[in-house]
Amino acid sequence: MTKDKVEAEPKKKGKFKKLLFIGVGAITLIGAGVGAGIYFGALSAHEAKPEDNFPKLVLRNKGEAAPAAEGEGDEAPLKTGTVSVPNDKYKVDPRKYEITYYPITEAFTTNLADGSGFLQIGISLSTFYDGKVINNIKRQAVPIRSVVLMVLAEQDPALLSTSQGKQRLQRQLTAAINDVLRDKEGFGGVDNVYFTSLVIQ
Image (cartoon, rainbow, N blue to C red; front, side, top):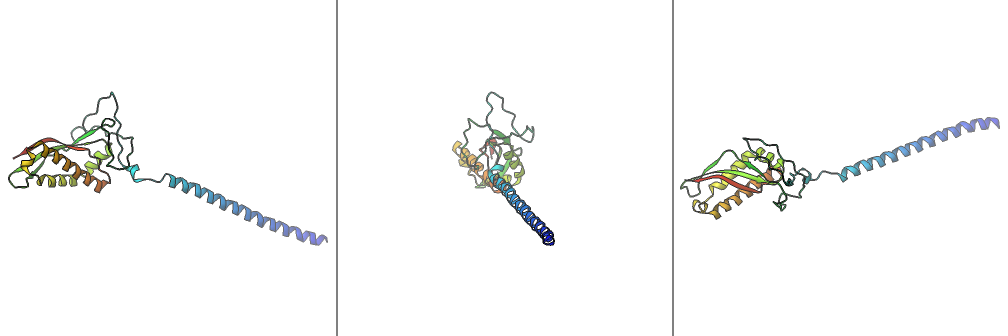
């Protein structure tokens, strides 16, 4: 009888160890599963959306002087926006947001559509968005220059002599530049094109 008890004790200890290892293993697996679920749940909750990388609108600072225009000559610090937008066709209230003007330093010269002369203009772009738009414009300077020249080459000199014709050209240039920026950068952001010089000969 004593011998049976002695043999039974190691068997009980062996079973207890197996159950203990199985229990610890199961708890470890459950803990790892819960931890992974929490980690991946947090990741999906903060998944990056395309608009997270879009330029942001710059709120107007009331009572403060506006910084100097940004351009090649005098590089003012780029503005930082705080208001996110769903897309670049968002309707902006100009009374609420700061505007930035970015002059294109080189003038554009092209022959006119009827071949009767040439057109030379200087332009400045405006945006209510932060420095990301300015950086996008600088980065895409070559395709922007190309599309501006193409739009200018299609102009009728008789129409350009009227204020309606000039306003139409402003709208065409704004749309063309935004199309380039959307295609290359995923976001337009140019509000308007202003003429700094305009010569028809």
